[in-house]
Image (cartoon, rainbow over all chains, first blue to last red; front, side, top):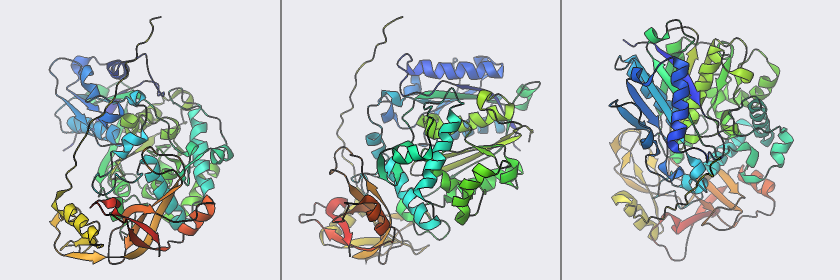
Length: 387
Length: 150
């Protein structure tokens, strides 16, 4: 049997290119202090601390979280699943609570890539040194390989990527924490420099650093408090090798099978049957606007061939969820934290604490995560109802 | 307000990556101008580049078979922004499924007309047939070959 898990508190720093005023410990402290205050708890109430930090090479320092191990003698572990680190970290903390091993877990993700002079060269090291690293594989070119396949298989056009990007930036204008506050049109996006066909610079995420923390806890700690409940969470892995997924009959490279499978399980746990109607808000892990397109069918928002049409529907149909009210990873991508930020933003929306970016009447929200060469996918459903 | 201190740093480490027996055999065959795949006894996929086990089935691979030398270009990108340590852009990188293989492998595509990026992209979207072209002096590495239009 599994205990229900509440998101009791959320803390976030601003996400910017560099935080020169803060050490790594300062950033973790700021997010953790805010999350604990939001939860109405002190550090003594926390039974386990889990830090999420993705590649050390982005910070240029091994185990950058080491200077912020709070509270004497608590169990502590670090999670690294590439881009999906933030949600893996959250799920690890939630598992401690769900299993009864902890009444409260502090989970915190730190991205310190402000210390890096180049991210793409570091990202090249996530690829296999034996068969792949010699080629210009980076997160940008990997996204481009997918974007061109989406255009061929599902009829997306360059303009679709630009429209998604413009919408994300527009939403970010109402998020004071976001890195980029850009007022741009789809035409501006298409006019930005081409990085790797078909991806333009404004369709790619910025290099952001910052920290995000959450306090997850047992229902007893939620009494009388404004919390969000984790109603479903699932994580699914896939083969690392992108080439193995190209002609796979069950689902190609752009079909995001691992996300679809996570969605099926998380929705089943949460009792979600009609995602188009049941979610007020969706926070997608998509550092490239084209990557969003892969999530729509995987999350059950439309059939795969209706993807391009769904982009238009989002603009026309107000009964659909609001996508990325935070601006999403396009407006801020603190890599280690990004997947946790999606969950945190959904929690804030469900609790009515999202300030200027609040969407009215959110009872249920869904957050996704993607990691590595998208061999990892997570889905987290949050809502007002205790499971 | 205190002046903020920033401390310069630099990672400059050398490494030796161990390719393992399977990849070493794959690279040896490349020197013989043969691209090899390995078969999974469970799912029967021919996995290219060859490797010791099928991760999906958790099974050791068995028979090694030659694939190609021609294949289908599955997906591509045309890199237009400079990337440190590689030839000047524009560069085309693609995943190709060689004839007889069930998986695709990545490499550069050479000798394309890239004077008009949009036109080049449109042509590559038609999934042209390509073939393996070996470098004059193979080193036993994945860069011993690239793809060209067949």
